[in-house]
Length: 464
Image (cartoon, rainbow, N blue to C red; front, side, top):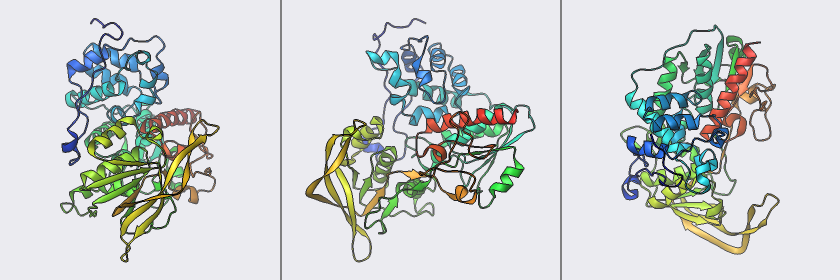
């Protein structure tokens, strides 16, 4: 195994489906490395003695080690190495913002393109799923019980780490399908549901019990959970949508991105009438926001038949918070970006159906204390855009269901749980929290990092 000289081999790219074809279906957009290409890319890693990529990974994945195993064609071993610290590599390899985390600090990237860490993680995870000879087995029980509320990335990560230590884990999920935001929030063309289901089956084989259709705080009271389990982890996410507060948000054809994506991703509305989850096929759709969720909503709208999709964002493209890859894909597929536009009013007809959206033309002002230029109005300049649907994708907050019923469980102004950064313990001893419920809407890998930190905190708490 001979490594090339630094910069001698360019970063290896993966193939992508043709934009004109993929914008009409839900097939995964980016394809995978083949074995030879994965090895070629892995050999670009210079195996730093003090790898910054590891310190920048919230899950502390042993990146140089798993990449070196790929370089040696030890693909199953590479997947096992990743899973020592991250139980969701197939998801992370697809949706994590590697460009601002592990790849963002890659030493190779100082002079050349960084090593494709995310694509290699995905390769290893997919190889294991295709070639694994069995599932992990249940460890010996230590007799202690933990309830994990929510089966999203934070909950799955917490359950995955604790079950390895012998804890009896029960995961409660309010919806009828497991996976949390990985299932209802991320379209299949970015993260196929079968990949999430595979990782959940691995946790089941290790002894994790999953119960769906249970709403903690209602169908199962918090007091009962505290009595029935030795510790509780709150990974309830941030599923409550935020609206702008402009006139017309009550009109027919206005959705939160949360509802819109859930109808498609979890309830199969894109297959109506084959499945009984209707969704009106709007022709001209405006998406308000510029994050990853907004890009998902834009691209889904195209796939369910929209002829025009507009992304309305009040700053310039440079300030778009979405991943560059997602913006690039959206543009390729035909999304039109109406930048430096701020929504003023959604206009309806006599039947309360959306007919247009009025936007305020903006410009960037002087930089503030943080160096960021805030958008300011261009007086007297507005633009009306003809649409028949508006999807609001400006953020979400945690559902206050549990917090309202448990006053000693403190929350902050954002509605997120107050917690100890070191061990993720809340204001109630033995109750821990992580992911979007603790931080507000963030990334999958940050939620996984929280789940892992909470698992360590729970282990310390129950080992006293």
